[in-house]
Length: 123
Length: 123
DNA sequence: CTTGACTCTGACGTCTATGTCAGGTTCAGC
DNA sequence: GCTGAACCTGACATAGACGTCAGAGTCAAG
Image 1 (cartoon, rainbow over the protein chains, first blue to last red):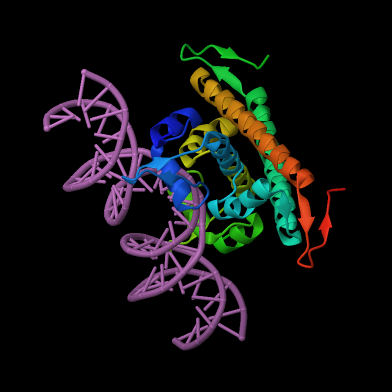
Image 2: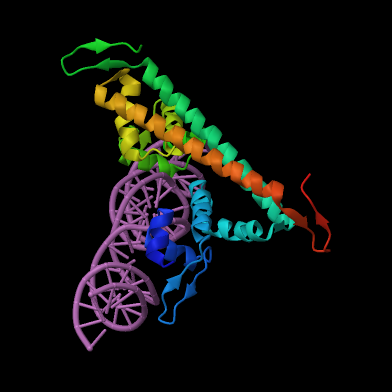
């Protein structure tokens, strides 16, 4: 599968895939002409990368974590790292929930005002 | 209260406070010599700003939202905006939880390997 | 063999909330 | 009135994950 196809399949840009490779998160074989070719499971790998990026991990962190997903083995230091990231995400979730509740509070306590001057209390 | 004191009280940098003012998120009165002075409630305002930033809102979004917190009134379009942000945060929370679970899965299925060669299955 | 779609490698651009540095001013305390 | 700490205004720097453009090469189909 060439890069365009993988991009479409994984729902990311071609540029992103090249970037992942540059960061050593993704590997490819090259055709004699130098074009990238990917294995079938590449889409899964890209999806995992995307998920970790979305969780706020940096390329560097993902690079550390990915090998153990493949090998199924971790060194203790890396296990600590995994747990640390996990906890960081939990903390982030709490932060977001607090902010969401704050917004909810605002939504519920404000009075809606139409341009006509009409007002409406929440609920 | 001067900027340094507010920065300490709110736990942000002086630079950040100047930036907030530049973005019109925060107001200050000036001494004859041009130094900023803040009201007592400024720390609360800064905290709210921080919370919204942490939730992934942009300065522009916060600028739109802040006035209604003060006045207690919103126009319908802004109410929609508030709800949209709220939902965006919810979606972000889901994304994070998925990623966390994914990490948990990795943590639980990998084998810990010490440099001695000793191995240890999870649990 | 031609063509057009696709791909390649640089390399600079972007966006956002600050960090940081320079050169100068203000102010509280003594 | 002095002094040092705190503050002022630019303005350039940063980090990260790409976007985007240029100029050139590759490849499958006809």
